[in-house]
View (cartoon, helix red, strand yellow):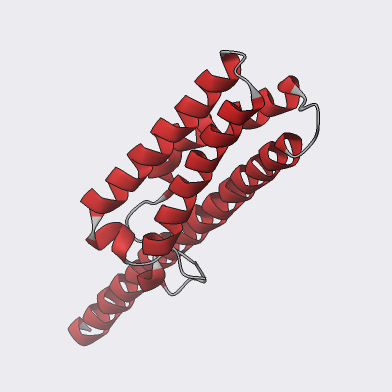
Length: 154
């Protein structure tokens, strides 16, 4: 009888462990999906900015909408990378492990991105000329590329 009870307790413990592991896998999968969806929005906003700036008369409203999307993303980007949502989770992600192993570097890259997103919006709201907008957009794009080089797999 005792052996049967012990086996039952062990089985329940194993099932409980599997349930916790499945919940963690599910949370990591959801984090990666949310992160990817958010970055698609950032990419679309960035594309909108660059398309507008290529026109002879950029639409300020379209530029503003895209700039606000990017600025918001920059302010919450850090939350898109919870521990356990990287390559170690066994989930398909372009996030490199260095996001977590070089947290200070990733934070600095995120801060640079946020600074450039804020700057672009200020230049835009300041009714600057197209040259100033192009310069601010180029700096913003560079901050994206810098982060991708170190923290994203292609």
